[in-house]
Image (tube, rainbow, N blue to C red):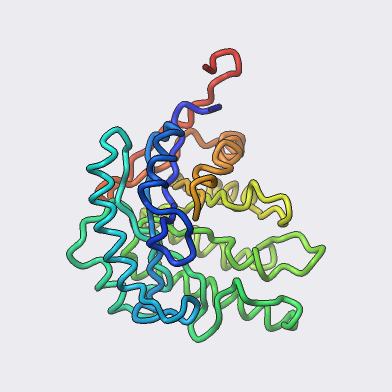
Length: 285
């Protein structure tokens, strides 16, 4: 590896309905990679807590309970892996009792906050940008940043995941994904993250995709640094073993080029800074 410390703190086992490999296999793969830290953060889509329309009516309530039991089991099983207990809370404010229930009685190291679906709408994944007028797209992005700000005001999570999520699916063919048109909304979110001592995630899942537009990670993290941000969590958002830590070296290259010297890992819900230490070719084993 090109870096002494590589961690992946956004990962899904088969306890998440859209993932393929079981938690033991995911942990074995992470251990084989020699990761400094590995956090499994199975899904809890709060708006679908008692039955998911996307997964045949299965309940995220059960996903959360099953994942937590397996996290404890695999921490005992993989004593040489720094496995941390995590959860990805999707749309927490769309069903606040569900978010509170998912967290109650469980001791997590790390909670991700994410927004896959605007209130009353469909997951961005299923949207076609060509069915919207420019004015409708503007309204979608305005609502997106407003709902994220409301989530940050609630604040019961540690990092904001994949802020570029809607750009993956709402960029017309041939367009370069960008938040430039919505800079005020982006800045408001970045300032709130900094003011509230939260982190922002560098989601590396698209870096290794050859068939997808390059997302504006450099622009976002350059602006975050300009505003004084220092806390960045790293996550490949892997849903299978072969994607664990995917794109991580490319992301660390970019962050180092921007001027960051550390990234953040959460343990017991507290941030710990990990140095970004590049290993020259001549020193690698």
